[in-house]
Length: 144
Ligand code: ZN
Image 1 (cartoon, protein in one colour):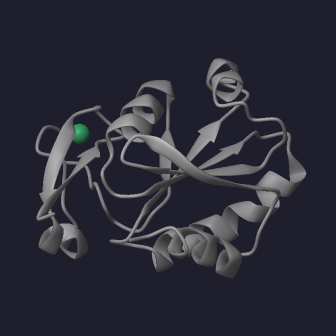
Image 2: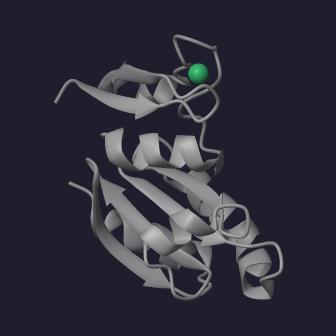
């Protein structure tokens, strides 16, 4: 594998990124937004569906809601995990209050729920708020 496809969370464009460029801050060829910068991606419904189905780099999605205390507590840990996993996996969040149809389709029963996608398929999920080191370990256990 010498390049991976990644969906741009801003414009929805699918980009092919050479693997050796993953660490060099690749940007979307269409809108110029960063594709891999170690930050948590705020996913809307369209970006969620594009990225979960099309991304070739592992994608971990945090299904959360603003009213959920444990979700808010975990948010800074998720940010730290995203930075640690830069270039290995992308981390995104989906607001289930704004997107109940996606939460239902994904069979999210409690939040926060972390779902790991690889090449268009769900490969693992983790329920409940976790510290950054657990989030990183969970993703790394499913890399490769
Ligand atoms: Zn874009």
